[in-house]
Amino acid sequence: MFLGTSGRAHKPSVLPPPPRYPAGGPYHPGGLTGIVPMIETNNTISNPTGPEWQFLVGEGTYVLKEDLYLATPPPHPSEAPIVNPNPLATNPQPATAGTKLSIISLDQRPPPFVYKGPAELTLSLGGSGAAIHEHPNESRYSTEGGMSSEDGRGTSTSDAPTASITLGSAPAFGEGNALLTPTPTKDVNKKRKPKNNVTKSNSSFISRVIVNESLSRRLTDRPSDGIFAFANINRAFQWIDLSSSNKQDYLTKILFTKAHCLCHDVNKTTRSASHIDVIMGFSTGEVIWWEPISQRYTRLNKNGAINNTPVSEIRWIPGSENLFLAAHMDGSLVVYDKEKEDAPFNPEEEGSSVNGSEAGDAPNGVNHGLRILIQKSVHSKNQKTNPVAAWKLSNQRINAFAFSPDHRHLAVVCEDGTLRVIDYLREE
Image 1 (cartoon, rainbow, N blue to C red):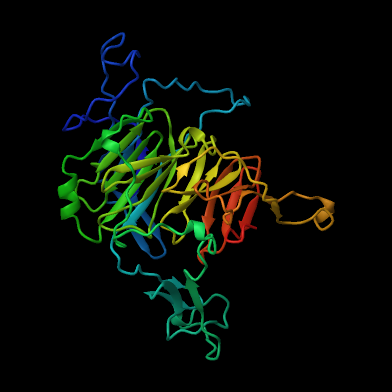
Image 2: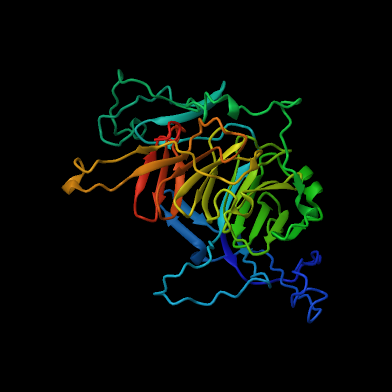
C-alpha cells in the first residue's frame, strides 16, 4: 500500500458538522457575509493496474494493489495566507511539515523478528522483558564475512559464544526518584483517560472534530489483528482503520485552528482494544495527549508555558506509560508526564554534562562544544509539575531523535550538522 497526500476534494456522503470560525470574522455565520464555505477534503483510494505499478527487486515483484491518498486540509479561514518568501530571506517562517504516519496493531501476539545475517535471530517475549536469542541451530559467527551458514556457503564455528541481547533490561528512566512513581489506581488494568471530551470541546485551539458515524460498530466488528494508522497532515490529524474495506473513510479526523501538527507517536506499551495513548506535537510548542477510543484529550505545555518553540519530534520513552520526550526547535529536549499539570518553567542550576572532545584533544585544537546543559534533571526533587526533565543541546533546531534497541541510548541530529549519542538514563 502506498500512502501520499492530495488536495483533491470529494463530496462526502454525510455532511460533517459546521466548522467553528472566530466571531466577527468574515466566515462566521453572523459575520460580514453570513456564508460558511464547505472546505472539507476527503481521502481517496484507487486500484491502479499495469506494469508501471510494479516494482521488481531481488526477492520478487511488488504490485501496488491499493493507492490511498490522505487529503491535505486547506488553511483555516482565520489563518493569514502564506506568501512565497524570498529564498534569501532570513526571517523565520511558520513551522509546518508533511505527512507523518504511524502503524499499530492491537494484537498482543509476539511480532515476527527474522534477521537473515551471520545468524538467524528469533524474538521471544517471555517474563518481564523481551529477549533476542539466536536460532538454536545457528552459531554466532561465520568464517566467511557476512555469509550465513543457511545458504550452504558459510562455515560456522561450533564453539562460538551464543548471543543473548535482552531488550527491556535497561533501568526505567528516573529510577530511584520516588517522586516519579505513578499513583496506583484501584483497578491496575484500567488506564487513566485524558480530562476533556474532544467532540464537545469549546477550545479555540480545535476547529472541528469529525467522528465516523459507525465508529462503535466498526471497532467491534474489526479483526483483532487489524492495523490502525495515525497520520498528521498540516493542521489535520487522522485515525484510519487499514483492515477495513472502507479504509479511506477515517474513524476520526481532528482539524486544528491555526496550529499545525508536526509529529506524533503511539504508546505501544499501553495499547489495547479499549485504550490507545497518542501524543501530538504542534507548531505552537503545545502537545496534545489523545485517547481515540474514548475521544478524550488533554493539552500540555499550554500557550508555551514550558517551551514556546515548535515541536519537531516526539516519542514515548520506551516502556513508560506516562513519560514522553519532545524535541523543540530551540535545541531543547523536554520530558513530559502526560498526567502532570504545567507550570511556568525556570531552568534549575543543575550544571552541565560535557560530551565530545576538549579543546586540547580535538583535531587542530578545535572544541566543537558538544554538551548537554541540564536545565532540570530527572532526579530533581521538584516533580509536582511538568517538565520532568529538560536538556539544552544546541542553539539550533533538533531535527529528529531515536532510542536505541537496548533502550539505553538516544541518538539526536541537529540543524547544526551534529549527531549526538546520549546516555539519557544518566543524562550525559
